[in-house]
Amino acid sequence: MEGAVRQVEARYTLRDLTFHGGRLEEAARLFPAAPRPWLDLSTGINPHPWQPLVPLAIDQCRLPSEDGLAALLAAAGAAFGFGGALAATPGSEVALRLLATAGLPPPWYVVTPCYRTHRDALPGAAMIAPEEIEAVTQGTLLLANPNNPDGRMLAPARLLEVARRLAACGGVLVIDEAFADAMPDASVMPLLTDDDGVVVLRSFGKFYGLAGVRLGFVAGLGAVVERVAAWLGSWPVSATALAYGVAAYRDIEAAAAMRGRLAEEAVAMDALLARHGLVARGACPLFRLVEDDRAPAVFARLARAGILTRPFEEDARRLRLGLPAGGFARLAAALAGD
Image 1 (cartoon, rainbow, N blue to C red):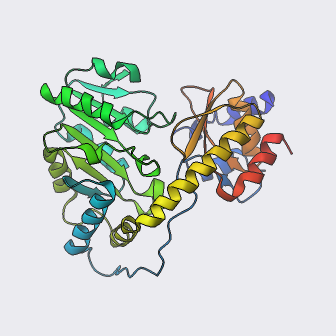
Image 2 (cartoon, rainbow, N blue to C red; image 1 turned 180 degrees about the vertical axis):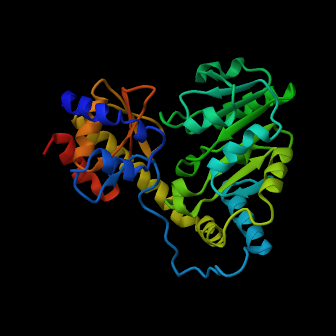
């Protein structure tokens, strides 16, 4: 097994698969003999995409309407339990990459482990551990909650205390809540007031399983939200994003049922991994993180079976796995070496 990993690393070093999840084309080049179709567990995106009860009317021949954007913001705000400043973006990735020019006060801090994009979003930021966030008393602090890749979850009330302490000194707390929709009571947004120095980023595609729609949001601190909205102009997102976002965010019952389903599947995933001596961690039900010396060998074994997981260049002991949906039996067989 280790020889096979070394052979792959000698040709490609696996770095093509550590930049972000979903790189099936690169995986196919790395493992050309793997069976098709690939089972992609590398992203943490909900494998059960939301589907409209009736076909959505989407006019691709005209510009997205202002009324449609207003309806989207109203539906999203209601789903988030938030009535403050809110702007739509073509995915939360874009919002992250706009942060450095949003006038956020220095010095900058990023809580690790984190998204690769978090490191890029605030160039020159100091990397700190989760237990150090209370020691930050000025500047801008960026973190994800729930966190990626380890699924760490911090109580929203605790984050609000951190934010208010920072705001008292002119600082800002930026919370990436890309995975918050999957967990009840995970978001700080229902607790926010206009005076809190908080910027929140949200993602539509992860929980609703429609990453290709490219829809996200920036919320909270009015000056930052207004600047992002001005940068993106009159048509920040597509007509498809408007239609899917409005309909999905209004479908409250489907969202509640999906949270229950994901929680059950996460428990089943933990049990499956445990049967093979792998301890899963993380509060977010959309993905599990394994930290084990065998992680490179497990990655290679699964990849040869056409199952893509997420390795990490900075820590070879880490392996992140999304939920397999209907692929539980295939994952179990691959872990067993069948």
